[in-house]
Image 1 (cartoon, rainbow, N blue to C red):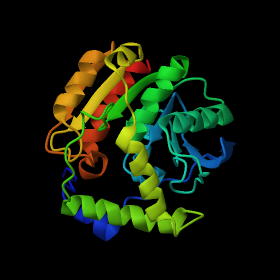
Image 2: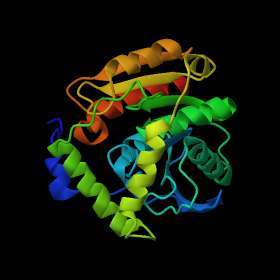
Image 3: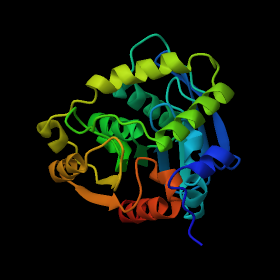
Amino acid sequence: MTFRDLDLTYVESHGIPSLPEPHEHGFVENEGARIWYASHGSGPAVILLHGGMGNSGNWGYQVPAIVEAGYRAVIIDSRGHGRSTRDAREYSYQLMAADTRAVMDRLGIEKAAIVGWSDGADTALILAQETPERVAGIFFFACNVDDTGTKPFVFTPVIGRIWQQHQKDYAAFSATPGDFDALSAAVETMQRTQPNLSAAALAGISVPVAAVLGEFDEFIEQEHMTYLAKTLPDATLHVLPGLSHFAPLQGPDVFNGAVMTFLTSILR
Protein backbone atom coordinates (compact mmCIF):
# COMPACT_ATOMS: atom_id res chain seq x y z
CA MET A 1 0.00 0.00 0.00
CA THR A 2 1.34 3.42 -0.95
CA PHE A 3 2.11 5.59 2.08
CA ARG A 4 0.43 9.00 2.20
CA ASP A 5 0.45 11.62 4.93
CA LEU A 6 -1.15 14.52 3.09
CA ASP A 7 -2.30 16.33 6.23
CA LEU A 8 0.90 15.45 8.16
CA THR A 9 -1.03 13.83 10.98
CA TYR A 10 1.41 10.90 10.89
CA VAL A 11 4.29 13.32 11.35
CA GLU A 12 2.37 14.97 14.18
CA SER A 13 1.83 11.70 16.04
CA HIS A 14 4.94 9.71 15.10
CA GLY A 15 7.52 12.24 13.96
CA ILE A 16 9.72 11.89 10.89
CA PRO A 17 11.53 8.53 10.49
CA SER A 18 14.99 8.58 12.04
CA LEU A 19 17.99 8.71 9.77
CA PRO A 20 20.22 5.63 9.53
CA GLU A 21 23.60 5.63 11.21
CA PRO A 22 26.02 7.66 9.08
CA HIS A 23 29.35 6.39 7.86
CA GLU A 24 30.86 9.75 8.77
CA HIS A 25 29.63 12.85 10.56
CA GLY A 26 31.00 15.92 12.27
CA PHE A 27 31.35 19.68 12.10
CA VAL A 28 33.26 21.99 9.79
CA GLU A 29 34.13 25.54 10.79
CA ASN A 30 33.18 28.06 8.12
CA GLU A 31 32.46 31.79 8.03
CA GLY A 32 31.85 32.13 11.77
CA ALA A 33 29.70 29.00 12.14
CA ARG A 34 30.06 25.31 12.99
CA ILE A 35 28.26 23.38 10.26
CA TRP A 36 27.09 19.84 11.02
CA TYR A 37 27.10 17.20 8.30
CA ALA A 38 26.73 13.46 7.86
CA SER A 39 27.53 11.08 5.03
CA HIS A 40 25.68 7.84 4.28
CA GLY A 41 26.56 5.14 1.77
CA SER A 42 28.93 5.25 -1.18
CA GLY A 43 28.86 6.11 -4.85
CA PRO A 44 28.23 9.41 -6.66
CA ALA A 45 27.56 12.15 -4.13
CA VAL A 46 24.06 13.56 -3.61
CA ILE A 47 23.79 16.48 -1.17
CA LEU A 48 20.40 17.13 0.44
CA LEU A 49 19.71 20.70 1.62
CA HIS A 50 16.63 21.18 3.81
CA GLY A 51 14.28 24.16 3.98
CA GLY A 52 14.10 27.13 6.30
CA MET A 53 13.55 26.29 10.00
CA GLY A 54 14.00 22.59 9.29
CA ASN A 55 17.02 20.33 9.68
CA SER A 56 18.68 17.40 7.96
CA GLY A 57 16.37 14.98 9.77
CA ASN A 58 13.59 16.17 7.46
CA TRP A 59 15.10 13.83 4.84
CA GLY A 60 14.17 10.69 6.82
CA TYR A 61 12.27 9.19 3.87
CA GLN A 62 14.89 10.17 1.28
CA VAL A 63 18.31 9.20 2.65
CA PRO A 64 17.67 5.41 2.80
CA ALA A 65 16.21 5.42 -0.72
CA ILE A 66 19.17 7.35 -2.13
CA VAL A 67 21.68 5.06 -0.45
CA GLU A 68 19.80 1.96 -1.62
CA ALA A 69 19.96 3.29 -5.19
CA GLY A 70 23.77 3.32 -5.01
CA TYR A 71 24.50 6.93 -4.17
CA ARG A 72 26.33 8.65 -1.34
CA ALA A 73 23.79 10.76 0.57
CA VAL A 74 25.26 13.80 2.32
CA ILE A 75 23.07 15.82 4.66
CA ILE A 76 23.85 19.24 6.13
CA ASP A 77 22.21 21.27 8.87
CA SER A 78 22.05 24.82 7.50
CA ARG A 79 23.75 27.43 9.66
CA GLY A 80 21.72 28.12 12.77
CA HIS A 81 19.48 25.11 12.08
CA GLY A 82 19.64 21.67 13.67
CA ARG A 83 23.06 21.10 15.22
CA SER A 84 24.76 23.91 13.30
CA THR A 85 25.54 27.29 14.85
CA ARG A 86 25.46 30.79 13.38
CA ASP A 87 27.13 34.12 14.03
CA ALA A 88 25.53 37.56 14.21
CA ARG A 89 25.64 38.22 10.47
CA GLU A 90 22.45 38.41 8.45
CA TYR A 91 21.48 35.29 6.57
CA SER A 92 22.20 34.95 2.88
CA TYR A 93 22.07 32.16 0.36
CA GLN A 94 25.67 33.01 -0.49
CA LEU A 95 26.74 32.19 3.07
CA MET A 96 24.87 28.89 3.00
CA ALA A 97 26.36 28.05 -0.40
CA ALA A 98 29.80 28.67 1.10
CA ASP A 99 28.92 26.34 3.98
CA THR A 100 27.96 23.64 1.49
CA ARG A 101 31.26 24.01 -0.33
CA ALA A 102 33.10 23.75 2.99
CA VAL A 103 31.39 20.43 3.73
CA MET A 104 32.21 19.20 0.22
CA ASP A 105 35.84 20.12 0.77
CA ARG A 106 35.93 18.37 4.14
CA LEU A 107 34.50 15.19 2.60
CA GLY A 108 36.66 15.37 -0.52
CA ILE A 109 33.68 15.76 -2.85
CA GLU A 110 34.69 17.57 -6.02
CA LYS A 111 31.24 17.54 -7.60
CA ALA A 112 27.77 16.54 -6.42
CA ALA A 113 24.15 16.45 -7.41
CA ILE A 114 22.05 18.54 -5.06
CA VAL A 115 18.49 17.99 -3.89
CA GLY A 116 17.24 21.28 -2.46
CA TRP A 117 13.97 21.84 -0.64
CA SER A 118 12.71 25.45 -0.39
CA ASP A 119 15.60 27.54 1.02
CA GLY A 120 17.87 24.59 0.25
CA ALA A 121 16.92 24.85 -3.42
CA ASP A 122 17.99 28.47 -3.60
CA THR A 123 21.22 27.65 -1.78
CA ALA A 124 21.90 25.05 -4.46
CA LEU A 125 21.16 27.52 -7.26
CA ILE A 126 23.57 30.10 -5.81
CA LEU A 127 26.20 27.38 -5.42
CA ALA A 128 25.79 26.53 -9.11
CA GLN A 129 25.95 30.19 -10.08
CA GLU A 130 29.19 30.74 -8.14
CA THR A 131 30.94 27.41 -8.73
CA PRO A 132 29.22 25.43 -11.50
CA GLU A 133 32.11 22.99 -11.67
CA ARG A 134 31.05 21.68 -8.23
CA VAL A 135 27.42 20.97 -9.18
CA ALA A 136 26.33 18.02 -11.36
CA GLY A 137 22.71 19.15 -11.30
CA ILE A 138 19.97 20.49 -9.04
CA PHE A 139 16.65 18.98 -8.04
CA PHE A 140 15.11 22.38 -7.29
CA PHE A 141 12.03 21.78 -5.16
CA ALA A 142 9.58 24.50 -4.16
CA CYS A 143 11.25 27.87 -3.96
CA ASN A 144 11.14 31.27 -5.64
CA VAL A 145 14.01 33.09 -7.34
CA ASP A 146 12.57 36.62 -6.96
CA ASP A 147 9.73 38.30 -5.08
CA THR A 148 7.15 37.65 -7.82
CA GLY A 149 7.06 33.93 -7.12
CA THR A 150 5.38 33.70 -3.72
CA LYS A 151 1.73 33.43 -2.74
CA PRO A 152 0.17 35.48 0.07
CA PHE A 153 0.67 33.58 3.31
CA VAL A 154 -2.36 31.63 4.50
CA PHE A 155 -2.02 29.56 7.66
CA THR A 156 -3.23 25.96 7.37
CA PRO A 157 -3.28 23.01 9.79
CA VAL A 158 -0.57 21.35 7.69
CA ILE A 159 1.71 24.36 8.12
CA GLY A 160 0.93 24.32 11.84
CA ARG A 161 1.94 20.67 12.16
CA ILE A 162 5.26 21.08 10.37
CA TRP A 163 5.97 24.22 12.40
CA GLN A 164 5.43 22.27 15.62
CA GLN A 165 7.79 19.58 14.35
CA HIS A 166 10.42 22.21 13.56
CA GLN A 167 10.09 23.63 17.07
CA LYS A 168 10.49 20.17 18.67
CA ASP A 169 13.52 19.37 16.55
CA TYR A 170 15.16 22.71 17.25
CA ALA A 171 14.75 22.26 21.01
CA ALA A 172 16.24 18.75 20.74
CA PHE A 173 19.23 19.48 18.50
CA SER A 174 20.28 23.11 18.80
CA ALA A 175 23.10 24.37 20.98
CA THR A 176 20.86 27.41 21.61
CA PRO A 177 17.45 25.76 22.14
CA GLY A 178 15.77 28.98 23.25
CA ASP A 179 16.54 30.86 20.04
CA PHE A 180 13.91 29.41 17.70
CA ASP A 181 11.97 32.67 17.41
CA ALA A 182 15.16 34.65 16.78
CA LEU A 183 16.19 32.21 14.07
CA SER A 184 12.74 32.42 12.49
CA ALA A 185 12.94 36.21 12.39
CA ALA A 186 16.43 36.13 10.84
CA VAL A 187 15.39 33.65 8.15
CA GLU A 188 12.24 35.63 7.37
CA THR A 189 14.31 38.80 6.95
CA MET A 190 16.43 37.01 4.34
CA GLN A 191 13.42 35.60 2.54
CA ARG A 192 11.81 39.04 2.15
CA THR A 193 14.59 40.26 -0.13
CA GLN A 194 16.44 37.16 -1.31
CA PRO A 195 17.03 35.70 -3.71
CA ASN A 196 16.64 38.29 -6.44
CA LEU A 197 17.91 36.61 -9.57
CA SER A 198 17.21 38.36 -12.86
CA ALA A 199 16.36 36.49 -16.06
CA ALA A 200 19.88 37.27 -17.27
CA ALA A 201 21.38 35.78 -14.10
CA LEU A 202 19.27 32.64 -14.47
CA ALA A 203 20.30 32.33 -18.11
CA GLY A 204 23.91 32.15 -16.94
CA ILE A 205 23.33 29.07 -14.74
CA SER A 206 24.16 26.19 -17.02
CA VAL A 207 23.84 23.09 -14.83
CA PRO A 208 20.92 20.69 -15.35
CA VAL A 209 17.93 21.61 -13.18
CA ALA A 210 14.67 19.84 -12.45
CA ALA A 211 12.23 22.59 -11.41
CA VAL A 212 9.77 20.72 -9.20
CA LEU A 213 6.64 21.83 -7.34
CA GLY A 214 3.80 20.14 -5.54
CA GLU A 215 0.45 20.68 -7.23
CA PHE A 216 -0.94 22.36 -4.11
CA ASP A 217 2.15 24.20 -2.86
CA GLU A 218 1.19 26.65 -0.13
CA PHE A 219 3.93 29.20 -0.82
CA ILE A 220 5.11 29.15 -4.44
CA GLU A 221 3.18 30.07 -7.60
CA GLN A 222 3.21 27.36 -10.26
CA GLU A 223 3.60 30.02 -12.95
CA HIS A 224 6.83 31.08 -11.27
CA MET A 225 8.23 27.56 -11.48
CA THR A 226 7.24 27.47 -15.15
CA TYR A 227 9.18 30.72 -15.65
CA LEU A 228 12.19 29.21 -13.91
CA ALA A 229 12.12 26.11 -16.11
CA LYS A 230 11.85 28.24 -19.25
CA THR A 231 14.58 30.70 -18.28
CA LEU A 232 17.31 28.37 -17.04
CA PRO A 233 19.24 27.00 -20.05
CA ASP A 234 18.98 23.32 -19.08
CA ALA A 235 15.81 22.84 -17.04
CA THR A 236 12.60 20.85 -17.04
CA LEU A 237 9.36 21.42 -15.13
CA HIS A 238 7.75 18.72 -12.98
CA VAL A 239 4.54 19.06 -10.95
CA LEU A 240 3.91 16.43 -8.27
CA PRO A 241 0.16 15.64 -8.33
CA GLY A 242 -1.80 15.88 -5.11
CA LEU A 243 1.14 17.06 -3.00
CA SER A 244 2.23 20.39 -1.55
CA HIS A 245 5.29 22.19 -0.19
CA PHE A 246 5.82 19.22 2.11
CA ALA A 247 5.85 16.52 -0.56
CA PRO A 248 8.98 14.73 0.78
CA LEU A 249 6.93 13.86 3.89
CA GLN A 250 3.45 13.65 2.34
CA GLY A 251 4.19 11.31 -0.55
CA PRO A 252 7.77 10.04 -0.32
CA ASP A 253 7.30 7.43 -3.05
CA VAL A 254 6.26 10.09 -5.58
CA PHE A 255 8.94 12.55 -4.46
CA ASN A 256 11.69 9.92 -4.35
CA GLY A 257 10.69 8.61 -7.75
CA ALA A 258 11.12 12.07 -9.25
CA VAL A 259 14.50 12.44 -7.51
CA MET A 260 15.72 9.07 -8.83
CA THR A 261 14.66 9.86 -12.37
CA PHE A 262 16.65 13.09 -12.22
CA LEU A 263 19.73 11.51 -10.63
CA THR A 264 19.76 8.75 -13.22
CA SER A 265 19.73 11.37 -15.97
CA ILE A 266 22.73 13.32 -14.64
CA LEU A 267 24.88 10.75 -12.77
CA ARG A 268 25.51 8.16 -15.42
